[in-house]
Image (cartoon, rainbow, N blue to C red; front, top):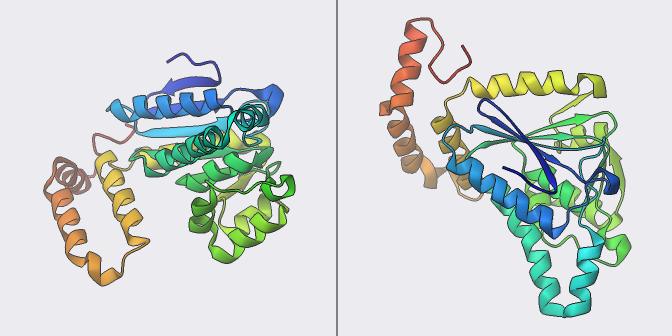
Length: 261
């Protein structure tokens, strides 16, 4: 895959997608939105891909939307502006619903749409340099498309506080809020990422995908409504090739075939 706004690297079952506009702190243009969607579709269609890693080039994750694209849409008409905004929402939705494991490595600026992508990551690893902000209301705008993902990740109270104040929080505050799961010094970030990837690769890919789908439903469903569906999901997994292989590997005291050997 060759892209203009992304640097792409594959390492076995791991696809590394690096937002690659460092001169603009990786501001998210419409071109980048399109390329991220394309890269994710390709990854999901490739059975060998198990994890997608998102990070930014040049010491920053993402400064949010490229205001040049918004200005161009504003100059056209309201419909064009709404369509541009909707593309950002569709991007976050696609990454939030991917059956692949999604890991975000967060450094420096994490703002706007970049904040939204951080919220949908299954695992978010932050550098001590990471700084998080929702600047939209200070610009007379609304964090419209990322709003649902903010509430989902942070809860209504904290999402509202950060969205209406445009306050900046550091990595330790983000950890306390549950926005990120780990903090590391910059020179330890790749080592921490390696540990996370190794842990995920020890998990069965089909079981991981089914678990993500079930947990997504559990967010909005009463537990009693999922008892039978969860039982069916469990039975299919236990009787499937992964369940049989995993059980046999445990009994034989060996690694299952999907795990790094």
